[in-house]
Image 1: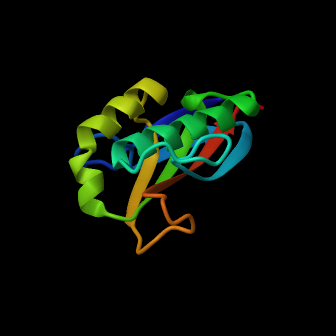
Image 2: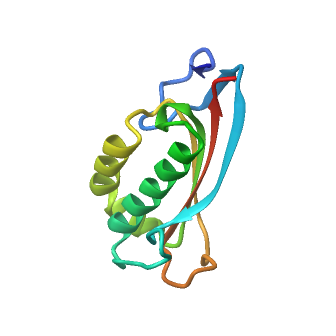
Length: 133
């Protein structure tokens, strides 16, 4: 399986994500929104950065269960309940992302939402990955 970032001619290279990713061939893995609780559905923190780290760790656990890894991620969507908290935790989120995911060749979107289904959840991350055929 290979995936390559796509950058339209004349566009500046984005920082921390890709505008588009082309992946082929492979099997598609869709991971539902992961929030900042552990495998037993317990929150250990109400800190945005800590919840983001846990949500990313949960994504990695799902990837591993499918025989994949972070290198197979091609798309990621972040739903955050507070844009300012997300931005304020940028350094902490970036460190967790580099440690757990390790690359930015991922088409990413972040959206501020009014609320998430779990009241304590501050962030929810969904992922699409393409695994080797």
